[in-house]
Amino acid sequence: MAYWARAVSVAKNATSVNGVVYWTSGGPGTFLPWPMDPGHLTVMTRMDSALDEFIFHLITSYAYVLVAIFVICLCGVWGWQIGRYVNG
Image 1 (spheres, helix red, strand yellow):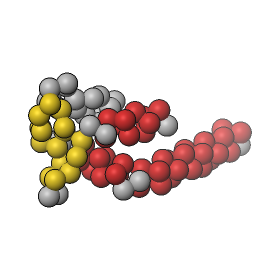
Image 2 (image 1 turned 90 degrees about the vertical axis):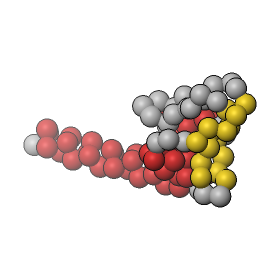
Image 3 (image 1 turned 60 degrees about the horizontal axis):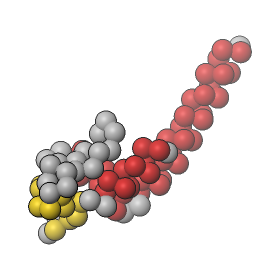
């Protein structure tokens, strides 16, 4: 959950104009492997990574909440299955 909280914070430094996603500050930011803010220079920089654009759209559409819930449930099921297998 810490990842998503940080990613939402970083997404505030990006915007979409006519379907093209830009960082609003110079020096590109990133969402992976850990969200990092772009630089402090005020300039529009195009987002180069398709994966960063996908994560940005997940955040702006609030679909990341469903993804986070799904991941938590999936990990719970996997943990339960592994526990059943280990305990016989």
